[in-house]
Amino acid sequence: MQTYIALLRGINVSGQKLIKMADLKVYLSELKFSNIRTYIQSGNIVFEASDSDEIALAKLIENKIAEKYQFEVPTMIRTQQEILDVIARNPLEIDEQNDFSKPYVIFLENEPAIELVEKVMVFNSDKEVFQIIGREVFIQYKNGAGTTKLTNTFFESKLKTKATSRNWNTVNKLSSF
Image 1: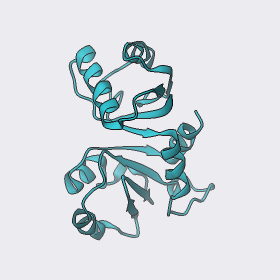
Image 2: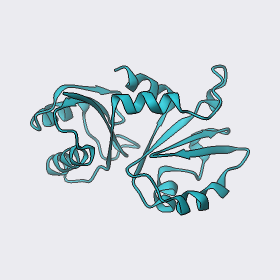
Image 3: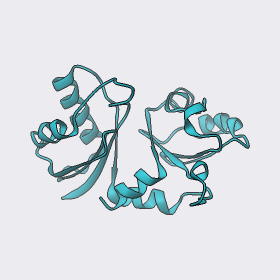
Image 4: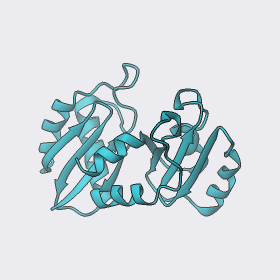
């Protein structure tokens, strides 16, 4: 059995796409996942499964949510080791005294084409610094994430793939949850 982390996009935000994590655990147990745990209400699920196809696992979760709630929730899957690797390869500075310097990680469904990455890099600035490595965007919002134009939707449109973001504290918590 492999440990996976499912990162759901856009649930329980601003009163939209409401899903109780306790209910979701029950529904996902119907998929033969085991040791299912959730972390905070923003759609972080840790579970074990024998299937090693991350895309198939994401589709199973997306289909189960659509069946139970009648709305779509894009889902990115990473192994626990992949989350540890994300932490290890973070290229951005972390200043524990300054919350705004703590990075976010935007998890992408697919690794974007190099020509798309090159085009989006022009949006780096002194206020919003990011690097794209594989299926992750490491980003720091110097003025906070609440005012940025470099959102999940921005990266989805520019990189032609689905995306969901987590703050650095959540990424670290998921690595050992």
